[in-house]
Amino acid sequence: MTDDPAPTAARPPKLWPIAVGYVLLRLLLTAVLTGILLGVGALFDLGMPVLVALMLAIILQMPLAWLVLARQRTRVEVAMAASAGRRRRTRDDLRAALAGGARPDPVDEVDRGSR
Image (cartoon, rainbow, N blue to C red):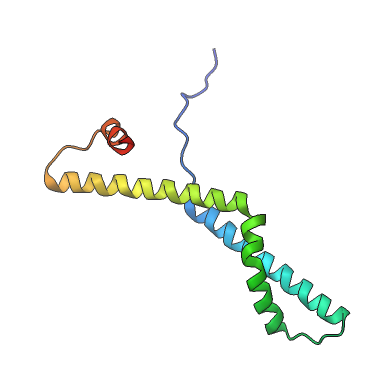
């Protein structure tokens, strides 16, 4: 026999740490692209201003982040969906309590949502 606690339901991920991580990765990608553009500009003696390199890096990071950060973006989407579901359940519980009704049965909610 072991003293393991009873298994608990998996907690959905919190949104803010995942979203902040995704934003930081996009900013890092922008900084790296800016550095590359400035380096290439200096290598070929183009005299590229930092602001121009930054604007080009912002434009280039958009499609590049879509390809490179797909896994992180998916984690953000899952966390957003879980957060929206929690808010929806809380809102429905509050509405039921204000209407004087009983708390809705979670099984009924699943059945209703699958139709």
